[in-house]
Image (cartoon, rainbow, N blue to C red; front, side, top):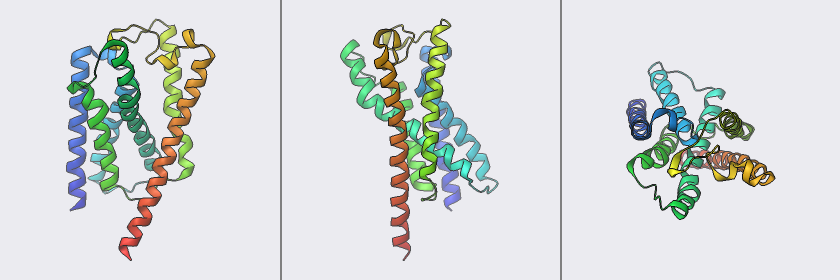
Length: 215
């Protein structure tokens, strides 16, 4: 029964993620939106859940690689949600008056992240995340930073919120902030590692709680 519920739930995640991405691409254009971390994180979620949906039909066994990737995705999508709600949206609202509460932003920043987190809570076996996996959670922000630098220096521009810049977020603006931007990017890496640690810690706690219920 749990397997069928998991399949139905993953289908819901896939549909919701596709819808959120479609709304953003349809409104702002594929090439304009595909360069943002939020959109890339949503695409990664879509790919992962699509593969997992078909894999579950074959009763596959979840390996170490599965839990490493799942942890990375949970960290990425969780930080996407919290950063947008508590950092990006308030800052942009203060600077431009943009509220970020339209349905497009709601899907990619709120609904998809929550659905992904709930999938872990409902269907993943707890205690499978390891503190050894935390180091992998810094890969995504590092690769994105490299991409931003290359993209910006070869003429690419980020155009969200009515602004045009070589950088998607103000803390990455090396030209304006200089060394402080480097510090900010380093702190961002630590935030990703910290979120990874928190998720693994919660996972361990949930495993202990599950064992107590079974006794």
